[in-house]
Amino acid sequence: MFDPLQNSLLGALVADAVSMPVHWYYDTNALDRDYGKITGYMAPKNPHPDSILWRSHYTPRNQKADILHDQAQYWGQRGIHYHQFLPAGDNTLNFLLAIQLYRSTVRAGRYDPDAWLELYAQLMRTPNWHHDTYVEEYHRAFFDRLAQGKSLRSCGIDDLHIGGLTPVPALLAAFDALDESELEHDVELVRKHVALTHQNVRVDVAAEALTRMLHAVAEGTDLRLAIEQHGLHWVKRGQLVFWSELDDRLVVGRHLTPACYLPDSFGAALFLAWKYANDFSAGVLANARCGGDNCHRGAVVGSLLGAANSIPEDWLRHLQSLERLRCDTLEPVFTD
Image 1 (tube, rainbow, N blue to C red):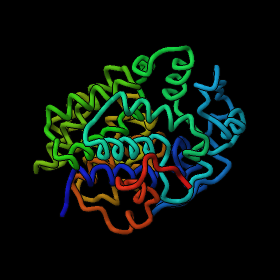
Image 2 (tube, rainbow, N blue to C red):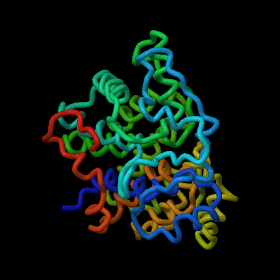
Image 3 (cartoon, rainbow, N blue to C red):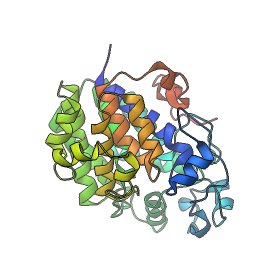
Image 4 (cartoon, helix red, strand yellow):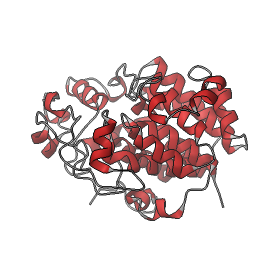
């Protein structure tokens, strides 16, 4: 049976995994040179020509802040791919955390923000829990504040990156699995959860809007109409109609930034979901091909398209995280 909110989480995971090898490519000529026309999952390659790891630094104050582990050796080097050790079809760090949020909420039978923060801290400080090389700024800031003695509830920062939206489909899917999904209930808890790490009004408003869009689609509203009704802060119908006649890279690259910063990144994701409203595969592939922060845009593009459409079996068959979603195994799930 097709379940839109469950499908929204699967769609987000697929969109992230498709984008993973070309994540944060801003030179689309280099993207095409290195990966050709993307048609499915691929493994990442070194060197990554747009990598900023050569100028990225993180030194933990103490053991409480050690979240890079053996990946720390690659920071400060040129050409290092952010996800260099992930196989084709795997998910990036924020989405692995979203999976754990889904599993832990379903297993507990309720959402508990303090239990989640404890699990988050445990996972991030466990060597080899994941194999991602890059760890976003908000994680680094969170654990630096934790190392200074702040409580888990006090470690979130003012961060306006679209990566803050990655937990939204997972939390909605968990509420749905527990038969506790109701619009205003979900909106309230999604906003509170996102604020644990992203204390930014634009992220808050976008998280609420995405929640309302996904609920509207789940209740039978046409995806394009849901985006038009709840996305007015970011896109207008006239813009969407006009942009849909242009090359995607012209829209997400010139009219809207391909980078991670809200509000443009959310508008870019809504544009791609609107344009490809009836074609899941075309939408997630278009998102990947636009480069920039396509992985985290994928939380929006993939979840909206997944809620509105069946996901072709091939995407799910080769999705590395499908087994991780099981809630009948011991907590937590560690990557291989």
